[in-house]
Image (cartoon, rainbow, N blue to C red):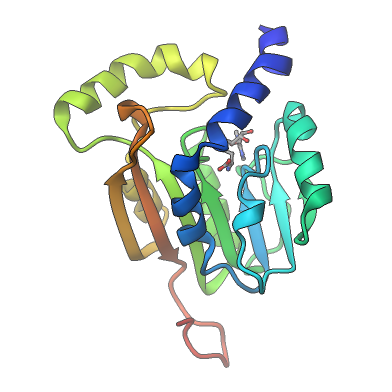
Length: 215
Ligand SMILES: C[S@@+](CC[C@H](N)C(=O)[O-])C[C@H]1O[C@@H](n2cnc3c(N)ncnc32)[C@H](O)[C@@H]1O
């Protein structure tokens, strides 16, 4: 398993995450990124080229050291400065209310304790701050969801812990983040069981003292 995890899986992940099918959704999702930004599950760095021109610097976390071979060259070539930390999203060392924006793309599926991680995301967001996400998840069509349930135990160990069947929006809302603009669609060019993607913005409720609500 360790040869697979060190060499094969990172290559497979990089290829999958570079799929043209994700380019537009990534760009749409990141178009709103601003202020102090944290990206969780940075992976091989496929989001970097999609940050809007105003973004000069982000902080990013990912626990998997075997992805560095792919993420490092992207970080080095990027105009966006990346302050990278080897961390998991369940244990963020940042003080509360630090970030204007937290980004997660195709990552909530892989976080072992996803509710804990979403609680951490909420904690580190400023009141009114935005959680930008683009996540595959549980298909609303029952027959397809049943296949996702059946195949997740087989798929998960091969795919870095990825669960096919998580109800993304329900999880986000259960963590106390409030949906703002959200859309779901079946992405063309992505296998059906991974192709139901929900993207958009959820916010930490509230406003910063002395500031207006975020637009
Ligand atoms: C499918 S990849 C997505 C990578 C990247 N976000 C993208 O869109 O290309 C899932 C990522 O989640 C990361 N991950 C797994 N467990 C995590 C955790 N507990 N906290 C944060 N990231 C985690 C993996 O290392 C991997 O990089």
